[in-house]
Image 1: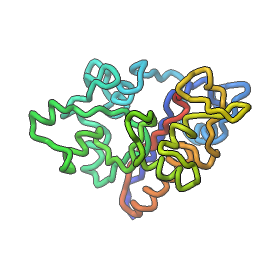
Image 2 (image 1 turned 90 degrees about the horizontal axis):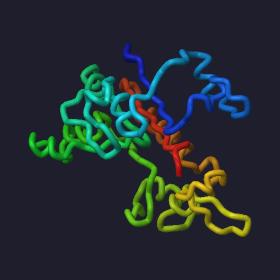
Image 3 (image 1 turned 180 degrees about the horizontal axis):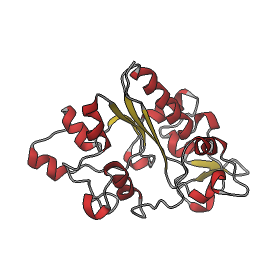
Image 4 (image 1 turned 30 degrees about the vertical axis):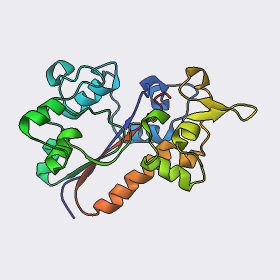
Length: 234
């Protein structure tokens, strides 16, 4: 058994701090997060480094301000050569992996300049913020990008959600009183639950995939970034 402690790095996208029971919300119940908070440390003056997803995540991964790492907006790549969690932990013998969302954009120009390609393990790490993409899923899959072979879509079809893009028609849509599809792309439907059973949701699925990774890793020290897509719209 390794003396290195494993790290489970959990992130939830667009989860407001004041919407948690442990931060005093009067009606929302978040017992599992509250239990983690009770056993750990709650930071009451921690601030996001950017108002949008990509740059904020790059600050988490690098420990640097947006003005330093250069990923200033969604779609603006993290410069190749910026050291991330994975780059620091892998030399210690840890397997560093991602399950779920990251919103990482690769530095294509930098990779071309240095002759780094995605068909090498170094290229994969450079393209994925230093993480092994055990199962990356950024959670936005409209029909026009043809996500038929998305792993989560294959899973949903196995559960009986029969559609070319069951994410779009079930996980990202609710149903009206007459059974009509209410698309999650429209914020007026945000109050409607999705048309998948709770145990088939993206959150449950990614949790199961995280447990698959932990079982597979065995005695190898690991850092797993379990990055939940929800409660981000849609």
